[in-house]
Length: 146
Image 1 (cartoon, rainbow, N blue to C red):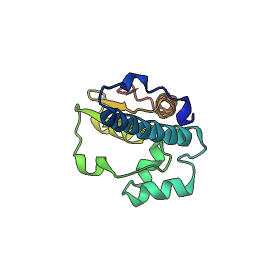
Image 2: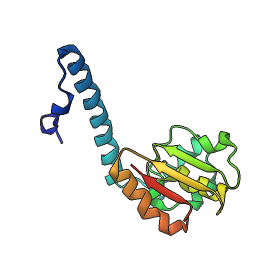
Image 3: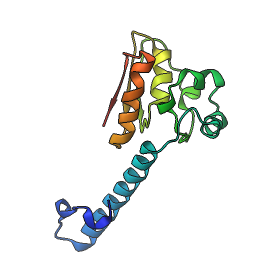
């Protein structure tokens, strides 16, 4: 979708400078969403050695990566929050920017059946991937939301 296709009429403001700033901010958000949607629609997956090597560089173990369905890992790691979070049984975990659900599914194992993991993402295509992968893991304690 090009910028000309986007409707920013809801950002009408009496101050043109504020409106310009709000439109620019919305355009950036829309561009980021479009880029991630494109990745989600693409063929990157946990089955790729290159994708797995990115996750490994952030400290994900082979054992963790082997637990994941192909859809969950697209090589978009920007950290390994589970390595630092100290997640325990029965906790509730929220993953903002969950993407294909990689950390959601790994956290679901850590919180166990008494816990809950909620993945939130701004991109419908990413959530579609996470939702497609969830039944493969039998992770009823996880969900994905926009």
